Image 1 (cartoon, rainbow, N blue to C red):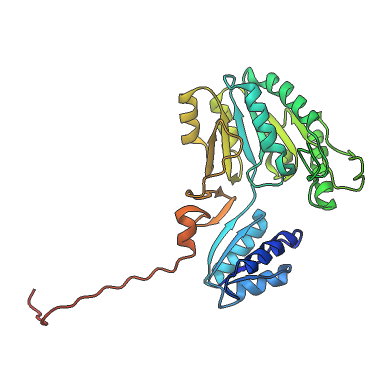
Image 2 (tube, rainbow, N blue to C red; image 1 turned 135 degrees about the vertical axis):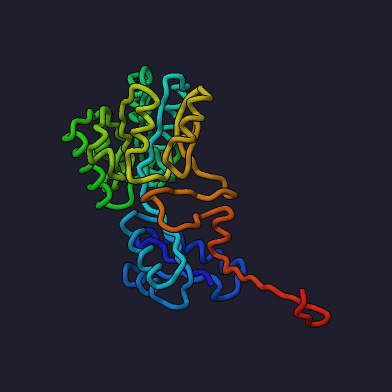
Amino acid sequence: CFILKPSEKVPMSSQKLFELIEQAGFPAGVLQLVNGGKETVDALLDHPSVRAVSFVGSTPVAKYIYSRAAANGKRAQCQGGAKNPVVIMPDADMEMTTKIMADSAFGCAGQRCLAASVAITVGSAQDQFIEYIADVASSRKVGYGLNEGVEMGPVIDPNSKNRIEGLIGKGQQEGAKLVVDGRNKKVSGYEDGYFVFPTVLDHVPPQGEIAKTEIFGPVLSVMRAGDVDEAVRLVNDRTFGNMACIFTGSGSVARKFRYEADAGNVGINIGVAAPMAYFPFSGWNESFFGDLHAQGRHGVEFYTQTKVVVERWPKAWNRQF
């Protein structure tokens, strides 16, 4: 059977999914839903009948689940955090690039593992991109997600809101320039909502906390590079390796990037390098712990117990070969 333990912060969507599964007539017990916190997780990790564990979440929790599952002889597939850089070259279509970057950085309020969180602008693209992205970020409509015209909703809870706003302040302390400030904003009719508006920080120091930490919110950190070689060095100077993208009109630059970028999912002129279902979701470094990734052939193999049978049927036994 398959057991799903959703995040304790969002249990209702999984509950609805399982109601639909029941209505569809799945056999009882084939799919099971279990809610709970760490105690529930540990019970699943330690139970002898659980043969494999797949996880999506933060890197510290991914490490914990991977090590405990492996210690109990279980197959483990653990996807951790990310800090996804996107390089913007001078020859990129800046209007298109900016719109795609805004959707990537601010879609789902930045609460997704493939959200663009760092923009590395190269050469003459630097000031132009800041001008474009500041305008798009400032004009993005924030509110209740089911209301018409709303482009971005709230973050998940007050702790997340406070943490994100604290990291924005930390970025300022480290020397970043606050171009668009999304803190302390209210949405009419939802004044108690956990809203953080789109935020843009420029001149983010590459070695600062804001440059290395997964914010998981609608915050875009902008760094500057002199050429593509420096941009690639900035891309690779991180502990995560979930996604890296580049916007360019040059085939040779794109080819260089696809070979040199240290990331499992690489995008060329796209803002979210989400692989099609036929290909593995291929995180690297501290974005993934395990050997078989989710999706594609890897996903099938992860849930497959292989068996090899070798047979011989001779007509008469004869030891002379």
